[in-house]
Length: 364
Ligand SMILES: Cc1cc2nc3c(=O)[nH]c(=O)nc-3n(C[C@H](O)[C@H](O)[C@H](O)COP(=O)(O)OP(=O)(O)OC[C@H]3O[C@@H](n4cnc5c(N)ncnc54)[C@H](O)[C@@H]3O)c2cc1C
Image (cartoon, rainbow, N blue to C red; front, top):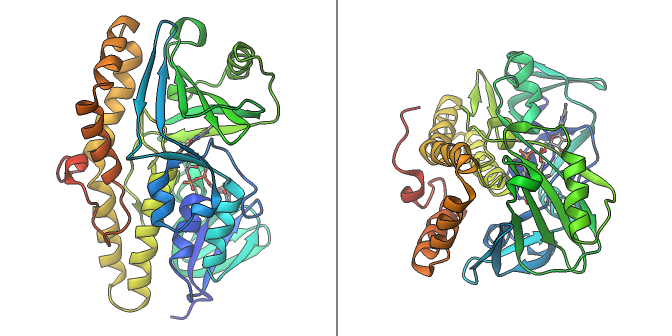
């Protein structure tokens, strides 16, 4: 059977564009209700190595050699010169990925999927393979399973970019002032900073008030705000004939809220697998199986971070500070960081590099 498109992708952000960028030369359609690069929701902090591996360094705004954790009583500094983080320009990064993809673009919301057809207000489009990369809403998966998003475990965050210069990535945990399940951050971007509040378990009420409070502590006032939900439970990335990637498949890491690196990583791996399928090397069933296996290898690690996300905010601050202090020992944090960074390394074909992070095969 001949379809108009080899692959249709709903969602043109990290995950969707990473898939499209690896399908150059194929007939690909990307659907998003916003223009490419217009839908920034996040602070855009990511390990520099991730952008280097994908040749996306042109989007970098500032490089950060330290992570700093603040409590009302103390600050803990974790130098990361071997594993620097960076903050980047969202629009530029999306454009760089888009330029690599030889895809058509339809600016419209995807409404749902029926068989091989994706519905939008501008018409229906038929594809041999369909990918849902529409973020936590998982719009295509939800059209097959109306309760899909109800099962989607989400954290919530809002941030504003203000003229506050700094260095390093800063996180503040102040349970009395900001709430036990909240964390604040400062992500500097060369003369300005993205300053935000994250709420574990998706509490939204009062977030703007907390953001204003935190900004006021820094002598700043809120400007334009963006943000939204991000997921924290890894899900099966294949639903019937759909491939899910990024937050649509719950791939944002629990606890740290780091979702960009997994979205780029799994998007790249899915793009590579789909290319092999389209070249006749893998059947569709093999492609599904390999992608599912690749993702679910991480299940135990995601579960561990999820348990920490539940546990840590429930500990007394004095106990938490003991862990934070232990973590500043170079022997501890260097080992942890080495594993953490190796987990989504992109230069090794299909397999994750660090079984240590994946903690063995999952039975999920
Ligand atoms: C305030 C905040 C700060 C964050 N900071 C960081 C950070 O610094 N580092 C980090 O790693 N992670 C961060 N995250 C998490 C990270 O943003 C997400 O995990 C990541 O964006 C997921 O990428 P994605 O491509 O799966 O989905 P998204 O980036 O959410 O993109 C989904 C895409 O789908 C499109 N879409 C939605 N509905 C439809 C539809 N019906 N039809 C077609 N298209 C649709 C959207 O327009 C969007 O382009 C943050 C999140 C928030 C909320």
